[in-house]
Image (cartoon, rainbow, N blue to C red):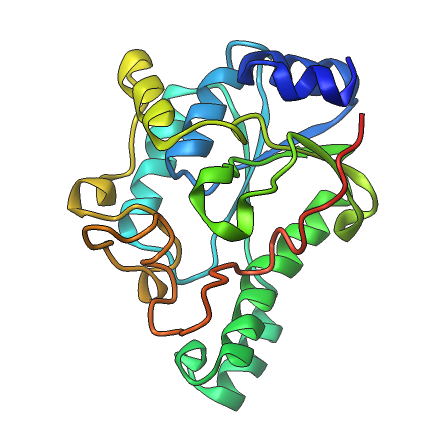
Length: 233
């Protein structure tokens, strides 16, 4: 299947291609709506998909609850990634526990230590990873490729089966297939990350407006995805 074929493929077809083409595939899940959909789909394609999730040490309790619900319902092999304790200690000793509010640079450092480095270390074991990125989510994600070469992680394949999906598509799937959903969505959240860095969105705001809302920069990203990469077939 070529990259052109994948651009026209359904999410299920893209997932089947991912698992049939690559020897070891990681489904990276934040247990937001998109990755919840992907876990449900993947469990219908492979017997026990490998799922990686980041426990930054600052997650809402509701995120831990939805993780437990998925572990009980789905036959996933879940690996919970934690940041290096010594790195966190050095960072917070130098700048305080809420350094992310002091400057964009320190917020990026916090994300680097708590998210970017743990994921990078784990992905060394894989040939491809699956993400729930959608083009509609924000301007920074508008050019998301269905399949790309991820040079940030050793050139492995990065696969976004839901790239062309709308928010309505995601929630339509959740309702139809009765997929568990994060409790914070019912409280007005549209995108969910660490507890101190996430708020509910207001009417008319885009989906990621509640992330690091105190920053004036419109690029609401943590560094896990870096720059959008060149599509490959």
